[in-house]
Image (cartoon, rainbow, N blue to C red; front, side):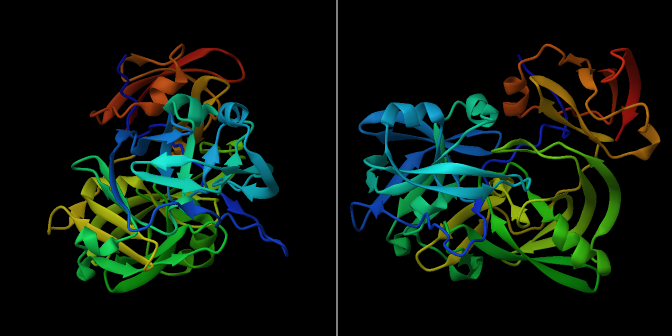
Length: 399
């Protein structure tokens, strides 16, 4: 079944996980490739901007998402099957700011293309597993596994290249910038420019290939820095809950929708970029960047490359619907309402019965979550079931 939930598509983040600060912090930067001087190219499948590859553990095939914003992670089912050695338990926080404690195991004989990795620490996820179930994957390949490689994403060929010989990638320095990796799991951090007329600022952020949006601005960074200068244009403010992390649906929180007139990544311009604040540890650039150029994360030389597919600036202007949906208790519901004009009509947790002529009340949430279809209309009929009364209500909405 095809679904056309518009750009109000379910906002889902993967395990942008960080071990929280402690005196004796555990580092996931252990293990590595068995081979040296390796160069392997692997086809990948793109589902809702997620890069999904086939790998082999003990010669058996599995599906993993390549997620530079996370530590390597496996599902409880895979943990039970592999029975790997438990090497630690650590507290972690997900992109929504929720904290939990997870087992850390050591993965052996993990083959990706022609390269075999041994001794790789991996978190065993627990609790909410909808993201893994919906995308039909067994885990995440995180930056701690990739930290001694250069990794290239090419969305035109749908090929992922992993090598410890980055010179063989024919990289051009003019498309690069210096990159910083964190000491816990080697997550890559880059810097972007934000431009509004004569006002220019920078944002150091995580490059998170597991995030299916383009640019998410840190709520803390916005409130403490960007809100004090004329850099971002205010569009809307709301309180609600819509993002899914490894510990489930985020807590109810304040969010802002903002417009960046221009963003530059490695001197390439994106115009009219809409961003929604996130309560995670940092701002993020996500996998939507792959649509516009070849991305290479050179962990070895600490460089980040973005080679655009075209020279001209890319305009990302878009109109927003007055609410954002999310998944809750197996239903597609209203997570957050932007437009105060709809207060008391469109409410948080209202069940979305139908939108723009498509029924969602009894639809498999996974189908909606993994669908790339969007409404092309600027007006639509929205039918809701009230979260408190159960009554059905219908509205004509616009963006």
